[in-house]
Length: 382
Image (cartoon, rainbow, N blue to C red):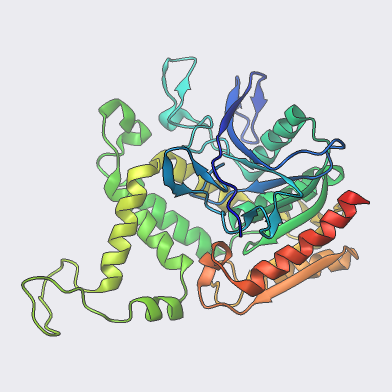
């Protein structure tokens, strides 16, 4: 399949005050955006792609002079791919509070002339959706053909169908959940605690000290990465293989607390890489947004009641070995939607890769998404 090729990001400024669910407000903010494909004359072929925890607006393609900086969902979005940019105008947006150019803790607070740091307010999935709606207004898009996301991105897609039922035709929720389990919240808390207890965190104002809580970020990423993979996948990739070093022979242990096993080496590599490019305050904000998302909260925990005013059609997909956002959570969403006789397509893919399967090449999964977008394309043409 053809690559979308070289792409460029754009910064969109929104000067109007923006009220957050927490009661705090921002005087104005920026969002980083990338677009792929062409918006048709009717502005009816737009698709919004929402990102997960550590991703960004860079959904597909590469940047000029950076051939290795490939969009995080490049296998899904592009010419001839499941989300075909020959047919659809696709928007990727970096959420408020993130660290890839949108206004967040690293940004300068106009009131102080210094980075927001710990003063940046807590944001929610609903806040993100409201900023995305403003962005759609700026593009002149009254209604998205579809809003799509995996993991935390799927929560945003679901929130779109709840908050703006007249502005979304299809809601595509992949490897996601209508709310986190207590276990998931616990994992997030352990990860946050690793950051908060890092001596270089300085209460969130580490920018002023010209340091970064790298140790906390490394541990947070290692914890998260374990939960994104399945036991079978880790066994296949690493097993109990020892990492060979120049001073070892055969299968001998070194009887130390340095890296002994290949899986340890992999986790430390992932942690180090993450600490190089991600912001600790952003990690705190986004994991808390994950924790807070619960559309049924205002309906005494009744998800069916929360979905009563939805009007979109839905594609819900899950993966058999995803134990963090398990298929049972997707089935719970499907059941609640069917109670309202919504049109729902559900696919449960038997894949060994755990939660990360939504980012990988799986022909069955991609064919489901491709077929669903074929249907949307027919509606757009009609």
